[in-house]
Length: 200
Ligand SMILES: [Zn+2]
Image 1 (cartoon, rainbow, N blue to C red):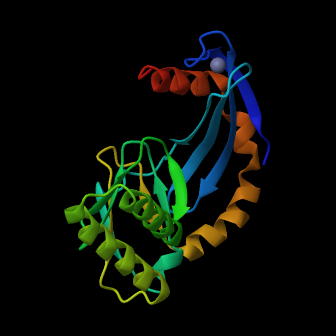
Image 2: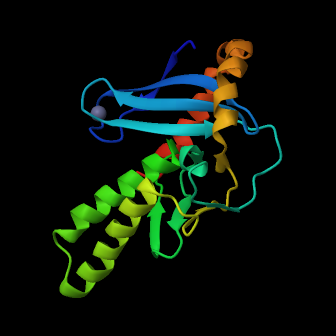
């Protein structure tokens, strides 16, 4: 897929560098078109990634749930900025400040690592809860029992959960949609980046 770039203004971090948006368009079956976007500064180390949704389809449900099983471990979470992923029974929420695409397994592995980090500075009461979370995640990653549920909440309805097969079909779809990357006007990218940078 071709990677395009457009200059989008001044770096919000150092205030001097030119901010460059690198982007490419891809297609995800059952979801639609997305733009994978990376912002980089030519002077400092500022770098951010985002997923820009161009879905022509109707909105996704604001709350989506899947049981954690051997099959769903390979499912993909397409998470937009502002969405939250919760793991039921563990009382564990992950808030996404930027768009990301990751597998359910990847998410659980990350959650486990974060919990391990947190454990180092946890109070006595927290330790018990966090240890339980780590143990449960370790067990469920090896033997997904269907006990846990992954809950994806996105009021803006951009996020979705995709079965593995849909993701695999993406490769074929991408070939058909290579032209789209060229068709996306840089003005649209600039507009999106401007809105995004308003929070600095
Ligand atoms: Zn900079």
